[in-house]
Length: 242
Image (cartoon, rainbow, N blue to C red; front, side):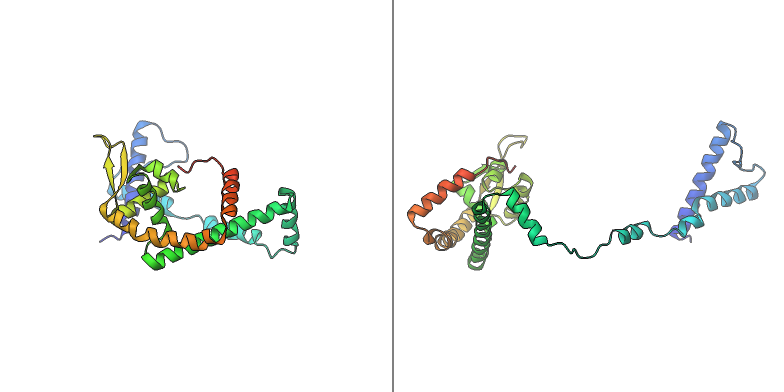
């Protein structure tokens, strides 16, 4: 019984023989190209073997050629830099953000956002088993009356439409959401809370809002909260997340 490689070689030889025979009938063979013999099966078999060897053999020059990718990798390999990267970056920051207070404020904003979101997510998972991303979806749907188109939902939770689709798929599999067709051909679809989804929202909303109050609201007085809200609205960018 032929192995898979042997079967493949036999197939190549057969294809080469058929192509050669067909071309031989259609037009004269160019100089230097051998024609299949017509005097018996032994001659045809020998001809087929010669064609097979040409198709499947690897030229020595190719087999002995050094690995090009390894060669390029060795040429591109570099050692550690000796430049003063801190000084170089500080100069770039100075040129890009000339006001020193501006760079400080930006770093403080990034740090506050990252640490608050991480703490809120960890706290919610520890208390309810649900993460902040789940609460965002359930909360926005609840605030909208229970249903939204998926594009509208993505905008409200600052997500791409494809990312929101994956999130809705997961929550739908858990029974927290369902999709409702707006027309017969299902071109319009609403993402809707289920009863189980409403119960989950009620379960996670309390602990999350308490954490927001503890970690954020309670640390600022009313004047600071109002000033912060004005400043953040001033720097908010009108963009799309869909």
